[in-house]
Length: 298
Image (tube, rainbow, N blue to C red):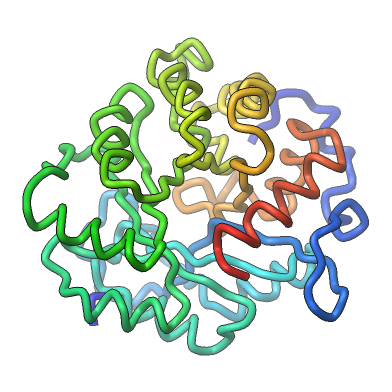
């Protein structure tokens, strides 16, 4: 099958683990829904055809992730296929099988993946595909094979998750918008650490709010600059994103297990940072509950 530093030291004093009291999206049994929209599961012995971002020396199995959800008051999670596993989604699909009610998945597929395979994965709880293009060339999304794949994704009402440097987002997102698929942009849009919110690519991203076809993931701020730079960018970016997209187009992810940043990041820190750059509890309630509940079909 195809498959730490903070920007201000005061934020670390926040209550990172208490999420349920601030959320209002309810399940059918009146349990508050709080959804982590970005995490990875894997074991070190899996084949890793793309080792550019591959961690080494540890496992991040599903049970460890579920334990993180439980200990931080999160009711649901979304598993994202790691780039280093390529298009072999078998470990992710097996993980979804273990808890179909609590989990959803985002896979990586080639442009030649047949529709029947996407339909099978859809039935397994997959709700989208990922284009992780950081450090790679932009594919020709107008080519016939890509157009067929994206047409199937649209028919299945999948999202296309884009992980791309901000200054290169336009070449990826414009063709996706033309097809009509839902687009989710990872990690605050990956602005250049030196430019931050003044990155032209980030400004392009802000302009997409009016399309109502694009969502932005408030996750992995540390990937946008070291020594607190990324977190500071996140703090400045959130009010701009809120103004242009509204809360119904913003979601959050822990980015667990924080690959390549394991020594400085943790799940608790990710939640603490969310409280820091989204200080309003009602805002957090929508970002953690109502918005992802609809987008990921929980």
